[in-house]
Amino acid sequence: MLEAAGTALRGRTVVNATSVSPDDARANGADAEARGFRLLDAAVLTPTPTVGRPEGTVLLSGDAEAFAAHEAALRALGGTVRHVGADPGRASAFDAALLDLFRTTVHCYLHALALARAEGIGGAELAPYAQGLPRLLPPLIDGYAQRTDERRHPGDRSSLASAEAGLAHVAHSARARGLDTSVLDAALALTRTAVGAGHGADGVSVLVELLAGSRAPDGGPTAPGTRRPPAARPR
Picture (cartoon, rainbow, N blue to C red):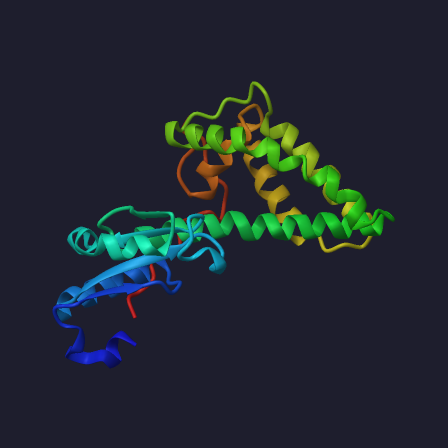
């Protein structure tokens, strides 16, 4: 669409609210600069019906001057409209990370419903107990974020070895009922690799270091197969 507009965009500001990868957003930003227009990349973090309403949340990144010039209009998109940096890919990166959390969480809940059904437990029976889990998440979200930023992963309350045992128990229970356990098996394999590398006494958050392909805080080895993928080429 941007290419089709040709020179008509010169001197204008374009806001892209479609979903693109962070690297594609950066490539689009560089292309916009070369063609003489300003581009802001927008990530809508809340469901479509919230757009334009107080509960709507939209993050934008890219040209800071363009955001400042059009901030009043952009604030009509939702109650929380925030510029998160000059890097054009930053809003997309927030979006990808949060979708990672949301999509995998939904998948895991559906797997739990399938396991419950296989054991003769209805979804409506399980749901009230599942509702209790979100109340445990706020301290975990903040705590793991702090540990990740500090690269410090104490296992004094819950260790990776304990998580390995828990995952193995769930995978065994699901496998016994013929359920697909590919996601559980992948999580268990990563956890076992980390435990085998000497991180059993560390906290579960140490997996961030292994997933990111960086070395663990104590200099221990990373899990095999966790190298960063090559950066995507601009289209």
